[in-house]
Length: 388
Image 1: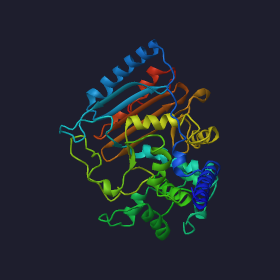
Image 2: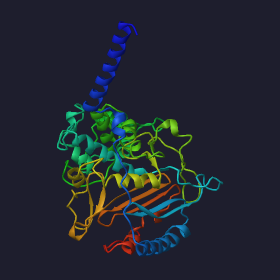
Image 3: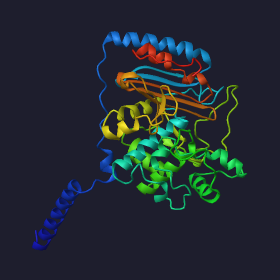
Image 4: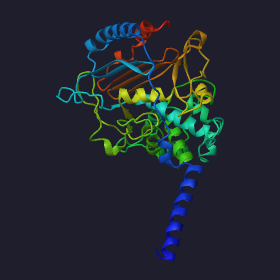
C-alpha cells in the first residue's frame, strides 16, 4: 500500500478512536441518555397474595365498574406485577372497535404528574430554583410574588384561565394556547383570588405556565421534552401529548347518554391536561418513579410532601400530586382527572407498592371510587365519603 494511503488510513482510525473517547467521556447526547433506563423487575409475590388480591379486585370491578356503564381500561398491580387488567366497551361508543391495551385515553389532569416531574427534573439539574419568581423567566409577568413552587402546589392565587378569559369576553371561535394564556395575563392582569402563598386553590393556569417554563428552561417544546425524557426511554409507546393535528384521530370522549363530546376553544393548552396514555404505559410511569432515573430520592420526597395545612384532615397536595396524609407517613399519592367525557384515576399506594389505574372515555364518576379497593388490598384505613 502506498505510504500516503497508509497515512490517510492511520489518520482515519485515530480520528475514529478519538471521537469514541470524546463521546464516552464528554456530555451525553439525547440518544445516549435514552439508553440508560432499565425497567425494574417485578418483585415475587406468593400464590396466596395473588389469589387473595385477585378475588378482591374482581369483586370491586364487577360491582363498581363492569355493571355501572364503564367504558375504558382498568389495571391493578402490586410490586410491578399486573394482578388484574380489563378492557370494556368500544373506542367509538356504540360501534364495534373494542378498546384494547394499546388504546390511548385522554388522562386529563393526571397529566399534571408529568408536568411536575419534568419541572422538578430541571430544578434537580440546577436550571431553576423552586423559590424563583416567575418574573425571572417571563419579565413581563405582572405578579412578582408568585414562585415556581406556588404554581406546582396550587398556591399562586391565579384563577383558572377559562374563567378569567370568559370574563374578558374571549372570542370562543378562537382557540387559546399556552402562549395566549400568558399574554392575556400580561395584558389584562386578571385579579388574583388571594395573596400568593396564602392558601391552596386548584387552578389549571398554574400548569399551563409551568409547561411554558419547561420549554424556556430546556429549549424544547413541551411535547418534545416529555417524549425525549419520559415516553421514549420508559418505552411508553402509546403515550403522547395531544396537538390540534391529532384532533381527527384521537380517542373521542362521550357524555353519559352516549353523545360524543366536541373539542372546544380550550383544547389546545397543555401541561394541565392533553396527554393521552394507556394503563400499561402509566404502570411504566409508576414503576419509573420507584427508581432514581427520573428524580433522586430527595426530589421525590419534595414532590410527595404536603404543602397545604389551612384545613385539617388527610387531604393535601404536593408538587403535582394529590395525597392522603395517613398516620405513620403512609401517604397515598394520586391524581384524578376529568375533561369532556374523559375520566382518569391514578393511585400509588407507595408503602404497599400498589398501583390502581382506571381510564375511561365515557363520563363515569365510579372510576374515582377506588378507596374501598385500597382498603381491601392493604391494611390502610381512612375515612371518606362514599361518593368520593
